[in-house]
Image 1 (tube, rainbow, N blue to C red):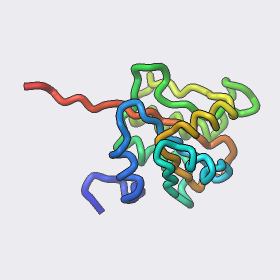
Image 2: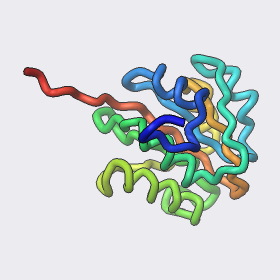
Image 3: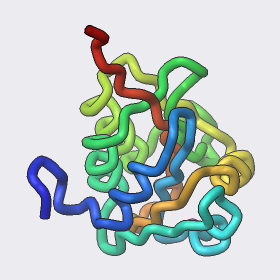
Amino acid sequence: MLKGIDPLVSPELLRTLAAMGHGDTIAVCDANFPAESVARSTVTGTLVRLDGVGIGRAVAAILSLLPLDPFDGPPAHRMMTAGGPDDVPPVHREILDAVHAAEGPAVEVAALERFAFYEAARGAFAVVATGEQRGYGNVLLRKGVILQDRD
């Protein structure tokens, strides 16, 4: 364990988040998502497992370390349900709540059509597979920067 790091963040997840650069995306996915096959197509080919963890808790742990990038459109995309972009089921509400708690209520979490989501996930830096059992519990998070003051 390390001070100030959520115990849910494993060494593998910590290494993955630290290796990401500005603009890289990480896919955080539910238990039904084809995580293994999609992860093979990512930049690193990395699959990080968080079995038994719900999507809201996983996103909160990740965003305790990962800044989001607000400069090039929405920094987060949730997988759109069959009900369309305005359908926000409870699993998406948890994602929204975690993003807004970490980054503020003005941060947009856009809906991305299911097959477009799969394609975007294949181009991600890595995939995090959670134990989330509710459908559509998937989100893409784009890493931002932490700027230091210049002296």
